[in-house]
Amino acid sequence: MNKSTIALIVLVIGLILLPFIQDSRSILILMTQIFILGVFAMSYNLLLGYTGIISFGHAMFFGIGAYSIGLIMRYYEPTYLYFLFAVVTTLILTAIVSYLVGLLTLRLHSHFFAMFTFAIAGLFLVAAEKWRSLTLGNDGITFKIPDFFKDRVIFYLLSLGLLVLAYLFFRRFTQSPFGKVLQAIRENEKRVESLGYRVFHYKIIANVISGMIAGLAGIFYAVSLRFVNTSVFSTEITLDALMMTIIGGVGTLFGPILGSAIVQFAQYSLMDLAKVHWIFERWVILFGIIYIVVVMFFPSGIVGTVKTWFTRRNKQILGKKKPEGKKSMESSKADAMKNILKGEVDG
Amino acid sequence: MDTIIETINVTKSFDGHEAVSDVSLKVSKNELKSIIGPNGAGKTTLFNLLSGQLKPTAGEVLLSGEHVTSLSPTYRTRKGIGRSFQITNVFPNLTCFENVRLAVQSKEGVYYNMLSHFTSHKKINDLAHEVLSTVLLDSKAEELAKNLAHGEQRKLEIAMLLALDTEVLLLDEPTAGMSIEEVPKILEVIKQIKETQNRTILLIEHKMDMVLDLSDSITVMFNGALLADGKPEEIMANEQVQTAYLGGLYNESS
Image 1 (spheres, rainbow over the protein chains, first blue to last red):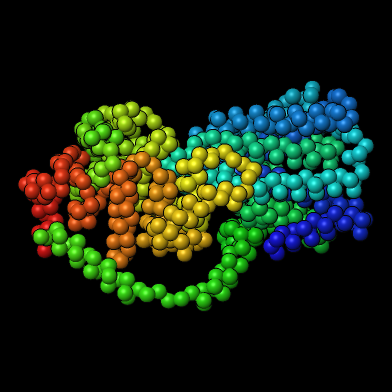
Image 2: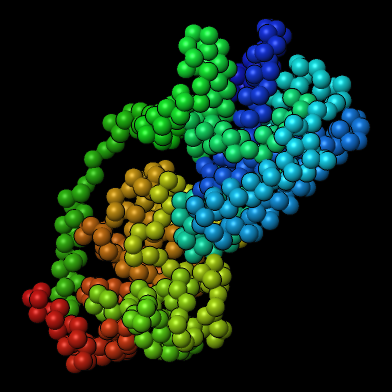
C-alpha cells in the first residue's frame, strides 16, 4: 500500500468521525453538499478529464435524478420502497437519455457537441418550468422522505459512503483496460481507431456511466434539501462541475473532490464576509478571478500541479544515478554500417 | 504466390487534384514491397487508402480477395492491416508502456473490460514489455510519450505497429527523423520481421539505398501514378525511373 492510499484511508476515517466530534449543523450540511457535488464533479471528470468530451449539459442528468426522487416522493408515498423505485427510475432514465445524447451528438466534435448538450439541457429546463401541473415550475416542490434519511448525521454518512464508492469505482474503472482506451481517445482519437477500437462505443459507454452517476448525485442533492426546483437543470450546475473539475485537477481522481470542497468552502466563507464588505456578497466575481488565475497558471489544476512537482522531484533523484551511455562506440558502428549500405548502392 | 493486398484502379482526388490516380497494385503474401517516389508522389495517400483513413474517389481495395473499400480503419485493423504513421502519431500524455499496451490489448481482443485492473492482464503487460525491448525503448517504458525525443517517438510508433501483430504491416517512412545511429537498428527490426516469413510488409521510404537490399520488390510512384513495379534490379535498370526519380536524386548527392 502506498502513501497516498494510507492518507486517503486516514482522511475517510477522519470524515466518518467528524459528526461525532463537532456538532455544528451548518458544517455538517456543508460537508454533505461537498460530498454530493464531489460525486457529480467526478462523473463530469470522466467525460472531460478522461475521455476528452466537453459537455455543457451535464446538469440534465443531475436534474433527472433530483426530479425523479422529488416527484415520486411527493405524488406517491415517502416509503423505502418508493425511494428504491426512484433510484431505479433515475438510473434507467439517465441511461436512456445519456445513450440518446451520445447517439445524437457524439458524431459531432468538441465544441459542436458542447453546444448540442447545452441545447438539450436547456430543453429539460424549459420542460420543468412549463409543465407546471407536475413540477410547479420555478416555485419547485417540497416533499417528504423516509425518516431514516432525515437524520443529518446518517445522511452525512450515506453521502460520504456514496463518495467513497464512486471514488473506488472510478479508481478501478480508469485503471481498467476500458479506462485506458478512454484516455487514449482523449489523447488521439484517430490513432485509437487505427489500433482497432470502435471509438464510438467507448464514448457512448463513458457517457452513460457518467450520466447515471450524475443522476445518483442529483437524488442525494434533492434529498438533502427535501426540495427541488428548476435550478437543478440550470447551466450553473454544469458550470459548478466544470469549475470544480478544473480547479481541483482535470483527469485526476481526487481533483474533483478537492475542487468541490474548495468551491463550496469558499462560497460559504465568502458569504460570511458579506458583512465586512459588499463585494463578498458577489462572490461569483471573486470566483471568476480565481478561475481565470487557475486556468492561466495551473491548467492541470491543484492535484495535477502537485503531481507534476512530485514526479519532477523523483526524477531529479533518479536522474543523478543514471549511467553515461557508450555512445561513441555505437555511433562509429552505425557509420560503418551506413557506409556499407551506401557502397552496395554505388556498386 | 497469393495476393494479399490488391488495389484496382484506385483514385483519390482532393478538390480536383488527383493525389493518387488510377493505381492498380498487387502485393503478394509475405513479401516486402517498398514504395518509393519523390515528395508529393502520393505514397502516403496510397497508404491512407489501404488502411482506411481515406476512402478512394474511385476504385477498389481488396484484402485477400475480400472487398474492404468501405470498411473503417477500425475494422481493417481487426482484419489484419496495421500501419505506422509518417508524422508521429502516439498518445502524448500516456507512458511509452501504456501506448504499446493499448496496441497489445487490441490484438488480444480485450476491448470492453471495465472492472479488472490492468495489471491483472499479465500476458498483455509481458507482451508490451517484449515489444518495447525489441525497439530498444524498455528503459523509457515509464516515460510520457511527449517527453521522448523525436527519434524515440518514431520507435514507439513502430513498436505500436509491431504490438498489433497484424498480417500486413504498412510502414510509412519508419526511419524519418531518427538519429543516424538508430537507423540500422530499425532496419534490423524490419529485417527480422521479414525473416519470420509470415508477414507482408509495405514500406514507404525516401532513401533508396536503405530499401534496395531489403525489398523483394519495389514500386515507384510519380505524380500520383504508378511509374514502375518490379524487382530491385529491374527498377535500378529502368530508364524511366532513373530520369524521373533516381537520376535527379543521384546527380544531386554525388
